[in-house]
Image (tube, rainbow, N blue to C red; front, side):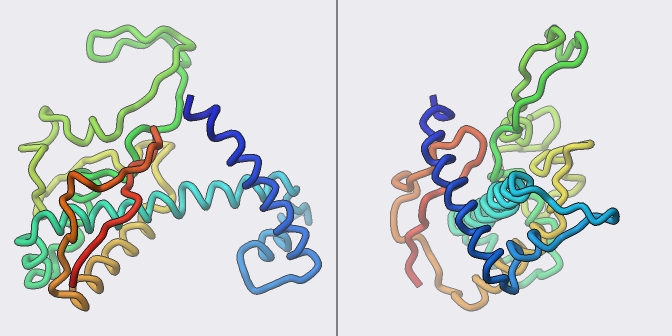
Length: 224
């Protein structure tokens, strides 16, 4: 149902992007859109308009929304655990482990995009026939008690954190290193500049997006 409801919005997005491309062809700018219009392969082949639109849409969803949710969800989790904010201030080397734990604890993506079984396969005593749809629950996997000690507890110093928040194998997120850097900087600067930052409403009253794939709050009202 959500997919059907999204069709008008997708149409509007594509219409907007086609207009944007026309404007940038007439008036090139120092931005990514113009760079994609200029880009050529080694054999001087340029991207088609549909390919450029697909690339921009991918960057908006996989390169923007996921990082926004990573930072937003992480800030919310830390605001609900103020002692951990103090730890990050006094133990800066903890940040790299904290980012991994926040991706695991409150993932920006709940489900992977759809996959289909190429062969019959048995997983956890369950047969998945060839051709069947497989929808991997990343959020659930990251809280698997057989893989993580105290999975429902936020542990910023968790070691050997083999979460799947960035995917795995050939589907591992290409932007994971950048997302880690962005989140690290955001958490550090935010809590340094606003040491008295705190939630302004009950967390139970926060509004979350309605997407089946991504997970993030619409806004985080705060006081400082």
